[in-house]
Length: 132
Image 1 (tube, rainbow, N blue to C red):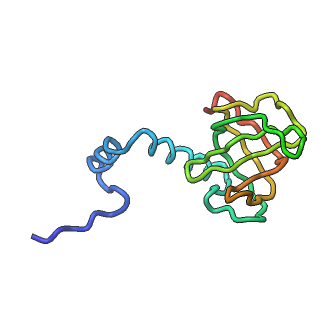
Image 2: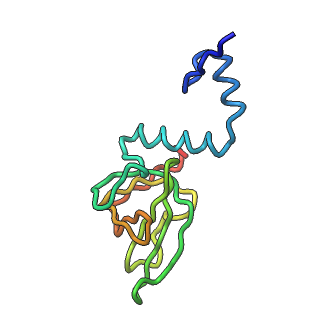
Image 3: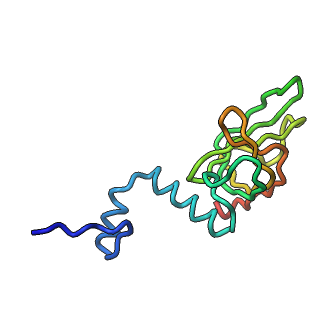
């Protein structure tokens, strides 16, 4: 008997159920974040290149206060399921609502710093807590 190649997307109800059961929680969470980004009309972080003007969304993983050249800087890592980027607000020690686990939409110009994508002083919008 010849093997029938399995398509990338499961087609039958049983196949979808098996695929969902065999997928890790982390992979399901990543897929959910990517679907959310597409629904809001944002660019996936993995598709962002240096010097692009972008609108991205995701969940803040970490928020830290780290001085840059003697100036306070609030740094957060934004993750959308495809990749992560650093969001940096220069001259800020804290911003109300910017905390780990919070979802937000950020827009601005991407730059590369030490091999990582960075958004400096982006325009941002906090997502409502009820949608998380």
